[in-house]
Amino acid sequence: MFSLKNKTALITGGASGIGLAISQTFAQAGATVHILEINGDLARQVADDIIANGGQAQAHTVDVSDQAQVVDLIGQIAAQSPIHILVNNAGVAHIGKADTTTEADFDRIFRINVKGVYNCLYAIIPHFKANGGGVILNMASVAATLGLSDRFAYSMSKGAVLTMTLSVAKDYLTDKIRSNCISPARVHTPFVDGFIAKNYPGQEAEMFEKLSKTQPIGRMAEPQEVGALALYLCSDEAGFVTGCDYPLDGGFVRLNS
Ligand code: NAD
Image (spheres, rainbow, N blue to C red):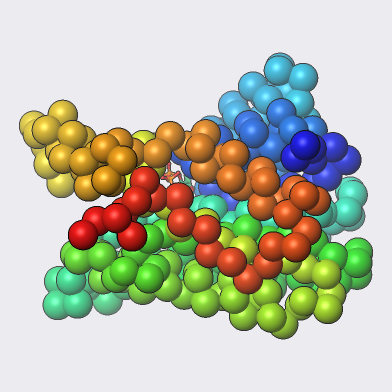
């Protein structure tokens, strides 16, 4: 079940946290994994590690917010072999309300979290159409539907990721392109550790505990748990699943009352 043998998958932000777990899980399932990363050195380490463990991987340095770079890179990969799966995972966080979010921060969050996803869609969809189909998986967040407090720009950006997921599912249904997203609550990754270290210096352990308890299940998710759901959604077994937003949230959305 859930084999990705003979599939080629692109994973943005695939060298850290959730993206790292997806790269490793997909490689273990037999996919050739292309890691699209702004941190090229880290991507090369991850690809080398996957290859050392018998998998197939290539690292690419790219800023997903730069359309010319993305179009050029995806064109080069597509010239090597057909691409079957795109995981739009790269994203950055920001703390702030409407009146405490600077224009520069607003633009940065939208450039990476929204335009970055659009750029990859723009580049891959013609290729998927020419190849008779493909699978898109976007990393949204519980913030997309809840509008988390003090996460003004971040929540909006993830709302856009959710609506892009739905628009693409509708527009390319007859092209056999499936489009879904996962909406995690807190996942224990460098993204969360960095957030705690930056905003609560000296209170790291206490804040980790507090944030863990905001999930009714009493802990954060592990990146591998997101990787397992991503594997299912990108596999042929999920062939009937499109236009869906999958919560992976330890009860955060529905049980927190
Ligand atoms: P992370 O910081 O550990 O990893 C993100 C990766 O994206 C990094 O390797 C980084 O180098 C890469 N990246 C950042 N900007 C890029 C760019 N412009 N071009 C290419 N690569 C870029 O983060 P994570 O926690 O694994 O989060 C991954 C995704 O999951 C993000 O979209 C995030 O919003 C989403 N998410 C995370 C959580 C969580 O609690 N960790 C919860 C909900 C949603």
